[in-house]
Image (cartoon, rainbow, N blue to C red; front, side, top):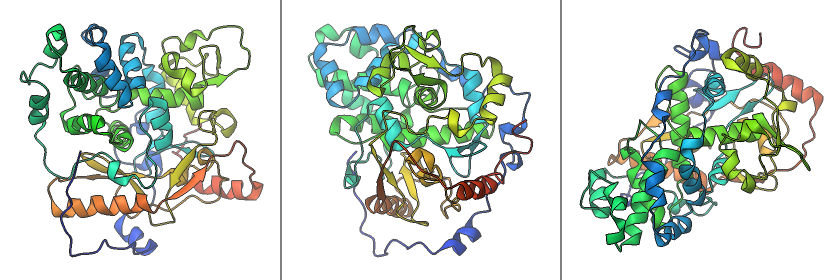
Length: 430
């Protein structure tokens, strides 16, 4: 959405050094020492909020009625992959045991998954690539979609359709409608609500309605989608409801943990047939004729044991679809990146995930002086300053290309793993 910054007399405050970081935030905690973390609940069998992701019988019939011109608009806006996933959404089977076991390893202070030998997270570039979203490039900060003013979500719906409480009416009688752009916008709300911003059964994500609407204006929405998922992972890890793109999370797990691409495979991987990769894997250099590394992992206890003992060798650090890709990193310690969300500012720490970013493991970075998730107050002068500060850090961020191979020093690895053990849950690998 277009945004207007107030004219500030104040300059954006500079990073005041590690001392301020230590004074602002406590040291990193072990997962098992974080109050309310679901890692401490071994009896947990069901992830809070997972029933939000039920089948939606209205979705596919609606999409099948879309005129070709409206589908063309969705493709122009970078929603081809989201459209394909939405059309096949009712065929997908979410493996909640694996998702629950993953969330148990999510660290709310670092916004990353903690494994025995390394950290990993969903990179912005990975998310954009997996979901086919328009890619952010440094220098395009004003194209990052978010709002700084209070918005009236109903006004957005009213702009698209006069029947503001019934988006389905846009498509049920569309043979009488010639405003194909309006139809495409209504469809975008539905497919993005299901794939990118799922909140509750059949509900529209009102908080992100302005973001979805901005897609037609050429805005980049990857940061909002990833920030929303990070916030949902943190919510679930602290016994709240899970929300965010479960499809993106499962695509990420599929590429890094579950499947290996195999040269000249002779059989189809049955495990993948109901996985999101079955429908969008081709663009990620992955077909259904792949090897499933986790085919024998069944049930929540087996997934816990597998993930809590996962080694570097069994995590595909540099997936084929990311090799040679340029990624964005903090310029230096202290100039932390934050995902510009519509409701929150979310700390983004790719520099903690050395191997995933194509670099050798050296040290475990200190915490940023920013909170992991900062609630926003749209329309507030301080919120505008915070957003502008976050934009400036993206403008000056570092860039690095992911290499296919990384050489590591054994002594540096040992030192890294020893420091990482401080974050490992007590008895976490048993």
